[in-house]
Image (cartoon, rainbow, N blue to C red; front, side, top):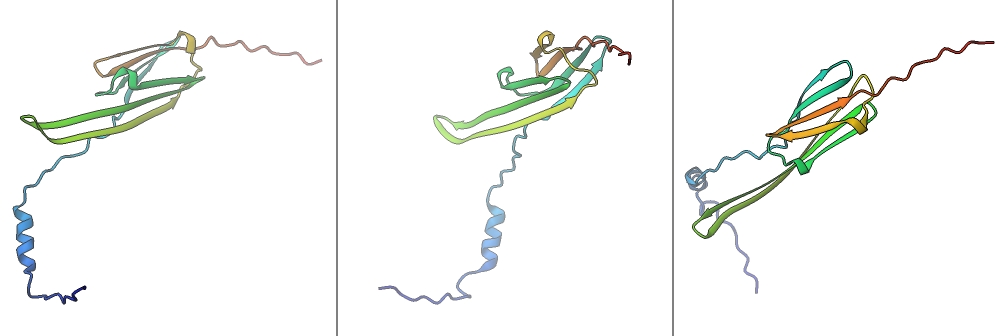
Length: 141
């Protein structure tokens, strides 16, 4: 059957366990954060030029959306890290992160004529302004 045990407070040394914790090896690593998107935006007479820093991301994982004068840049980072000792795997980690940045421009953007290029962690967008429609004053009769 079951045996009833009464814990003896003097049987364990609480200080012994505390000192053992100091002797254990420590491993301090910070988690890989999701990429932060930093941008430089310049305006010319007929277009905007945007440079966005998105390091460590493949171009297939970057999404750029344009809706009138709203521009959204999204990026997903996926990393896999493996530590081996000989043929034994000691540790294997997978991490995912997501970053997004939206901003509104003063003029609507021509989505059809916009261009995007990604090289060495820099996304460059050329966003031409839509031709402004002229306003017509109506005469009141």
